[in-house]
Structures are given as C-alpha cells and as structure tokens.
Image (cartoon, rainbow, N blue to C red; front, side, top):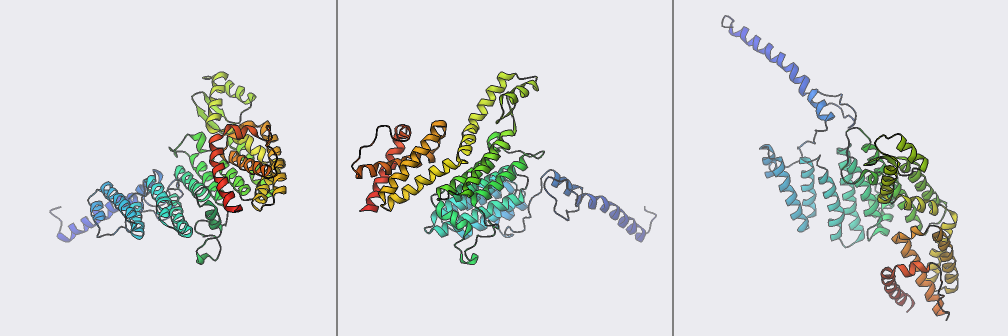
Length: 451
C-alpha cells in the first residue's frame, strides 16, 4: 500500500467503501411498500423484512415536538421514561380539563409506543368515557365518544395483527354506543350525526355505510376472531371460548335493541334468526382445547362419543365434564334457546303486545292497555313454561315486571282483585329487590304523568 500513490490509495478506499455499501444497502434498505401484517415482508432490505415478519416496526417519531423534554429523553435512549412522563402529563391535563393539550399529548404517546396495546385501549376509553362525561350536552359527549372511537380505529390500523384490540374496538361500538346512559341518543347519532357538517348523515369516519352500531361492533368482533386464528397471533384478555362468542352476542344485541325500540317486524325476526344460526352453526361447531381434550360446545352425544374415540388421553367422562363446564362458562345453552325462542313469530307477537300495552297505559287508554298486557303476559308465560331458564336475563325480568305493575294498576282502578295465580307469578315472587326498585320508579312516573 505504501508503494501506491496518494491518488491510487484514494481509489482503493473508494472501491472499498462501494463494496461495503452493497451489504449495508441489502441489509438496511427501508421498505418501499406496505405489506399485510401476516404476509411475509417482501419490500426493502433484510432488516426491514425481518422487522415486518417479527412485528417489531414502529411509527415515526417525527410528530413529537423536537424541542421537548420528551424528545431529549428519546435521543438519550430513555423511551420508557419519556412515555411515562407523557402518561403523567396526560392524566394531569385530564384533571385540569385541558382537552386540546390532552389530545396532543396522546398523539405523542402513540408515536412513542405504537405497539403497546394498552395505550390505544386506555386512551381511547379515556376520551370516550372520562372526557365525554365532563360535557353537559349529549351532542358534546358524543363528539368525544367519536374521538375515542377514531382513536381505537387508528390503533387497529397500526396493529393489524392485534386480535384483542379489534375485540376491544368492537366492545366500544357495542357497549359505549348501545348501553351507556345516553344510548338512545347515541344510537340515533351514530346514524344521524348532530354535527351540521354531516347534514343528518352518519360521520363517515366511524360509520361509512350508515349501519347500526351493534353490526359495526360485530364486524370488529369477526375480524378479531379471524386474526386470532392466524399463526403466531394470540390474545390475552379472556378465555378463548368467550372471546370467540362475541360476533353472535353482538348480532343478538342488535336484535334485542330493535325490539326495545318498538320494531317487531320481519327485520327484528331476521336479526334473531341470524344470531341463532351463527351461534349454533358457527360458534357451536368451533373446537376448544380443554384439560379434557378437544370439545365442541354444540356437540351432540354422538359428537362427544366420537371426540372421545379420537382422543387416546381422555375418555367420555372427561369429555362430558369439560363439555358441561365450558357450556356453563359461556352460557351457551341460554343463548342457544333464547335466540331460537326469539326467532319465533309467537314470541315476537307476545313482546309486541306488551310494548303496545305499555304505550296505551301512558296514553290513559286503559281498557286496551289491560287487554294487551294480559294477552302478552299469558303468551310470554307459555314460552317461559317451556324454557324457564330464559328468565335469568335481567332485561326480560324487567320487561315482565314493568308489564305486571301496569296490569295490576289498571285492575285496581277498575276495582278488580289481583288474581292469586296471575301470569308469570314466579317472576314477581323471585325478584323482590328488582320489583321494589321498579315499583318506586313506576309510582313516580305515574304521579308525574297522571297528575
């Protein structure tokens, strides 16, 4: 090398650099296109492909304030400390009700911890539940509920292999929209947004197809189940047998919501039929690993015998024991029978009569109210005589007790005694606490309506 001229040495160095660049480029070239999470990475260098395949990639830090203390910590390799500081800052901003600053802080958190699923769940629910509760107007609360929904949806976009985050997003659309204290308004707003920019339509960011919130939730639950089946994907939020039940439960929640809102037509009937078909045909045929080997929740005796014959480690007694345990844990028999019964025209007709009877009662049209309530209770009683375990559901119990309270009130107004053996007397006797609470509210409403 000493015999080479300066110019020759420079050429050798240049050639060496170029040779070394080849493996550096091959290893370190960034991805040039997005690949689905569960497909092999086929873009960029070796490191980019490995990062994709092992799900180690994270979002850019470009949106974190470069002059902030957080960025200084990140540059010093203390990402965890920076994240903890931001979480404390977010809690303080929530306490001080600095909503705009809270949003910015949350944005910084997800830039630092995009693969930490608790960030998405906690902050999404924080926006929708805690922040929205600080607003007085229902429309303003719904604005923050949407913020939480959009945040969770972004989380699923950045963690497309996270089955549990899809499940939690489905839970959000189902429970927060459908079961909160403001569920009547929220369900309406979900399809007809109060924001004038949407001109009476749904906010297309969260409901582009203008669907019921429970059906949107069902889609997320279904996707969660699909993700959970993929190799290398796991969820850790609940037992697998419960996790996989949610699409069917959401379908049945949709059917029940339609009827609670006064729809007793073919649409609500079909919704129950779809729920029953999924529960029995899909969920009921799914396989689950238990300490007693593989079981099927909808298994017949012949199915159990075959499962035992195929399993050298567990006999039929093991199969029956764990089959019974899992059916009880998932409440499988209840929803199997409930969806079947609610799919029948006679049940829908009985529920329709009770609903119309309650309307007539508060319209002070008491004779038709009495007839409808009495007919509905008798018809529903015939159903529950055959399926007594269906009376464990709180909504059904309340529905029956409210109707009984109104029916008895009308009888007293007409000067007639309450029969000892009136329809669904067992529901009346077995739920004294619920009955007392409903009776108190009933008396208050009657006093305000009739006086």
